[in-house]
Image (cartoon, rainbow, N blue to C red; front, side):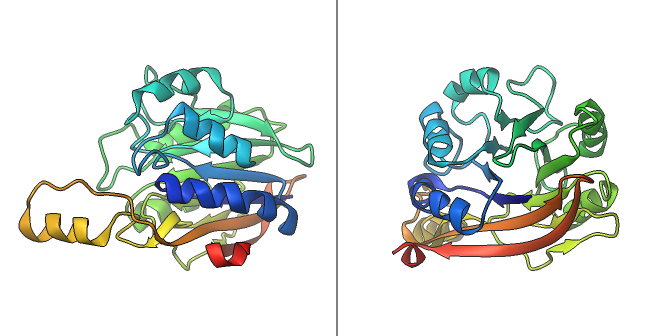
Length: 263
């Protein structure tokens, strides 16, 4: 089976290219499941119920989230009621949202999906390694295909998680830095790994935000709102092929889709 993870969707430009590109990607790449990190889809920070509906309506199957999950408090009702959107599993148990989900892919195979937040240079959270163990034990044993979106800053943090889950997860794919890394690989135990799958949004920017706004704030320290940029919108993601009978990855590759590729 074939799974695509796209991440982090930044603001309206990111959502718009998802709406245009996903139906084409599903057909052209013969995708069975599409996972998207949606935590920056609302004007660059957080996600709203309308954003959730827009992404799911475009063909996204599962939405993962990270440190900006609660920037829009109205998403709490969606987190509580929908079965295809997950919070980082190492957040406190009382935090709104589900720690993992199991969804049925287009080919009929059930897939477990979960998200974790890293701890290096990130907000204080529970141990992601202990949370990974808990989630993997909770997902039904018959669900052999399991995908982790590891939302973390440090590449060392991500590499450690990949090695820790090697052979226990089909894929450990990173988000959060908005910059695609060129380290996609299949680890010895059969887990597909990449430090970061990149960003969906305007690449003529600083991580999706207008260059002049970020420069002004950095150089002068004057309080400045970081507006979402608009130029050179691209969709970055990573496709993983998985043997559904074993849950082991058989191939991994990066993809980049630009607006001009959509005709």
